[in-house]
Image (cartoon, rainbow, N blue to C red; front, side, top):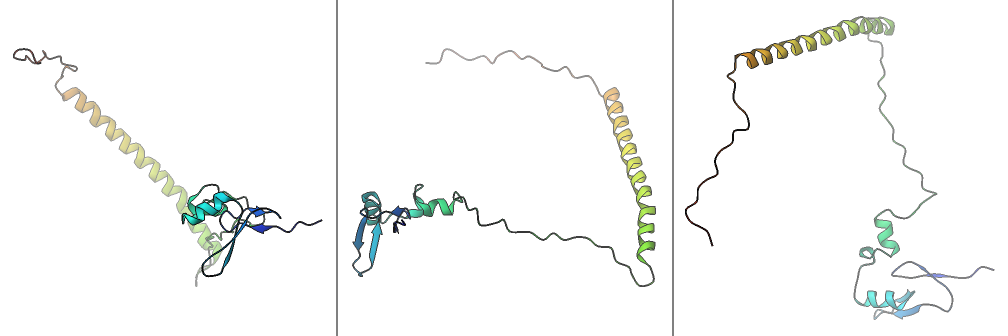
Length: 148
């Protein structure tokens, strides 16, 4: 047997037969409310979306479990190499592969040279600089009389 249920206009909970209040507004529109709590909050002109226990709040803050809605698929841009007039695809790929290893070795060599130069400059600075004692202790400042 199927039980006919209504939805509360405030909380959107199901109202079973024999429960709830039918409230008619001044404009003649009937409003179904599931509880006196919902009725008093509606009369206080509270927004259901601001109350955590209502379905409106749960919908806004993505707390509802929706099994039938799948995540939207995202199309990703795929890079495709195409032939140019006067050069076939195979020729372009061969050229690309020939230049890649050379560029990589050049980059590694440059990084090594930079690190060597940085090391040299730090050793020169350390040797040439005057030694400065660390953690110097100073005498506490003297105050005139007691403070009250």
